[in-house]
Length: 224
Image (cartoon, rainbow, N blue to C red; front, side, top):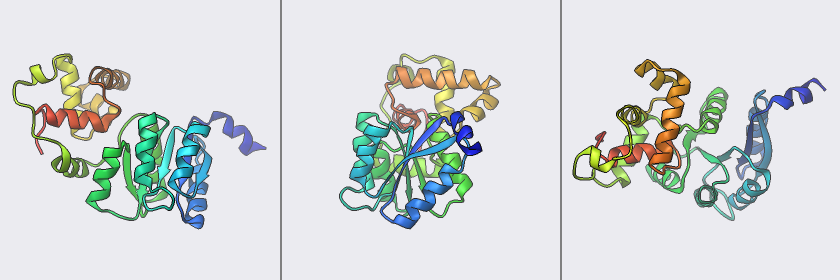
């Protein structure tokens, strides 16, 4: 009964997708053990994950890549297109092609299965909060792969709608800093940093922080 009462305070809803039954159960158990996270569905393939994304309204989907019926990359693309949930790719394969495909498909994070349980829970919280979970090294690798050269011309012409402060925030987002780190760097409150990021997402029509990073590189604010 105590555990059920604690569930009233859950804020993050998660669907887990993996074709290995034991691993799926283990991941669900780890995630469900956190007091602020609950598992609302488990999928054995990408098609089931897409269906659960529609029916269970999760905040985050922890998605394997290699699965039957539909792989995690295609499932991620469909989920992101419909804006059903944020996707955290969880895989054993640290291959560039998967990173690139996952980000192209709209994934908000990429984590290897050998990561500690605490890192998995932290990743879910980060993504649910609207941040992207990509180390700067991974960000630069994927940008070199599929981002075109910076747009010619002054940054003011490429990004005419953002303020000087928002440009500073965009640069720090591109460096991989979280909202809290941005606040500390600029000596502003965390809420203010979050507001600046939200404003950038709206003004630049970006789905998430990963797209903000790509926009920053295309505008020539940051170089690979």
